[in-house]
Length: 109
Length: 109
DNA sequence: ATTATAGGATACCAATTGGTGTTGTGTCAG
DNA sequence: CTGACACAACACCAATTGGTATCCTATAAT
Image (cartoon, rainbow over all chains, first blue to last red; front, side):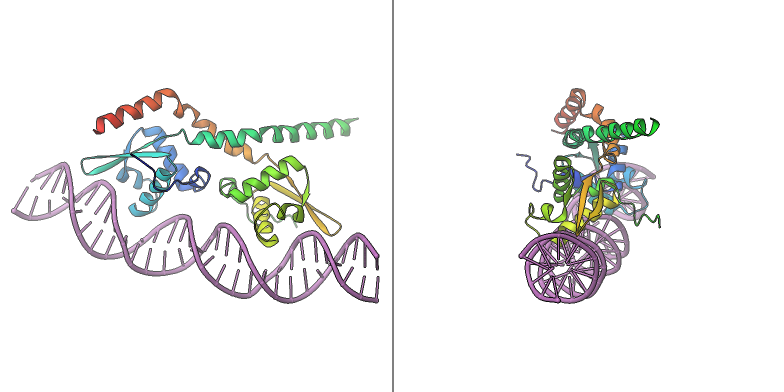
């Protein structure tokens, strides 16, 4: 029933520094209304709300209405896709390290 | 002339699926000229070249001229920043968090 | 009941993004 | 020498992004 109308790419969702900061705030604070989030940024409420919508579309944020406020909380599990993607390349930067070490060893001799 | 044109955010560099595929191709192939990369995409040479420029600005790709062709290769180490960032949140997608979200959802009803 | 607050919904705007085609230049093959 | 090739450098364009200001409704406080 709760179908996501527009599924957003997680990679593009975390591309914006404001959205990464939102993720950080929500990770620390468990649950926050829009107002409390807005005051931490040098931009208006509408802009923050748009960023939260994008995070929601990527499944990174959930919200619930409590009285007159909408409280947002983090759902970090979509970030697993990022970790899976990036960990594939970890062997490539350790490979670079091995090459560098090789070059340094050759230089020493 | 040690001018680094504009240091690009690694997060935004990997936000585009075309650029992620370029990273993948370069990871597998060690070194590739622009032409060999272009034929793998449904777009023109100029578009692929622009994506490679963005990857270069993020430090993810290096290039060298060999004769009349420019060969590109991967430099994966900037991806470490991504891994550092995402690994911080791994604790948030644990089973306990999922249960908390579930409890909050039930409270809503 | 009145007023202040939280935030959804729009309309609007400038800058950026992701693509195109064209032109020019250096390089390799006949 | 003459083409064909690889690519950079532009100019250009539509769609998207990241922000604004404004209006409206629902809720809370007095």
